[in-house]
Image (cartoon, rainbow, N blue to C red; front, side):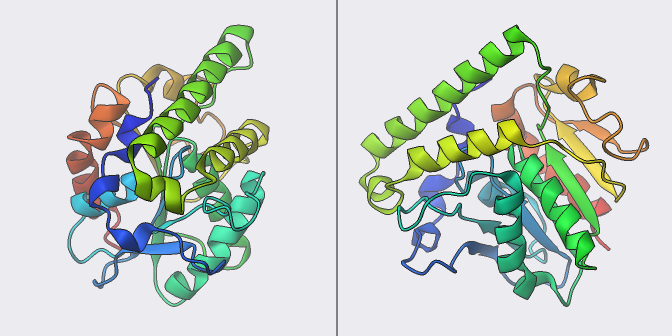
Length: 259
């Protein structure tokens, strides 16, 4: 587990466009608009920040449009959503104008993989199935007392990380004043979500740190994705995956997501 700093590695350079506006409809954020390749919808991790999408945008070819999402409620304008189904439905609704007339992929980092999978299900129901679904460092913890204890410790660390960054960055404190509450709501949503089998094209990226869980029949993807889904290791830790490992991920995504 990490302290969540990796999720924020691109935040300082993401630009003012990532600050929520007063409009409740401004929840999809362009990382890169230009390009003829399929659109990449990048779903944030547990902290809800744009760091993952910004890092992914740097790693993908210039011709690959990339969009990400801002969690409902992060700016304090409305209550946060408390189920993965509701979060996914909101993201699908705001993304339809971007992807309805062109091919697209979905990539979800950490707990964002749960949202990404639910989005893929909902898009498929609408007749707009993604070309491919990418998971990055997502694993389900087994339902054991020790695993639940580790999960609680990790979640507490995430909340502490949020408070630390808000204390250091007045811009965050101003625009994301309900960030801690939104993270808590996302934690609740992830805890209560039951993954459903998805039979579309998928690809799993994992750090070495998370690989035992990803490959586990109890905590991994067994029975949830096609048997031929590749599992690709990129980086020793979660920080490595989002930093140096992202270049490898970008190259592989660019090759496998070209059509």
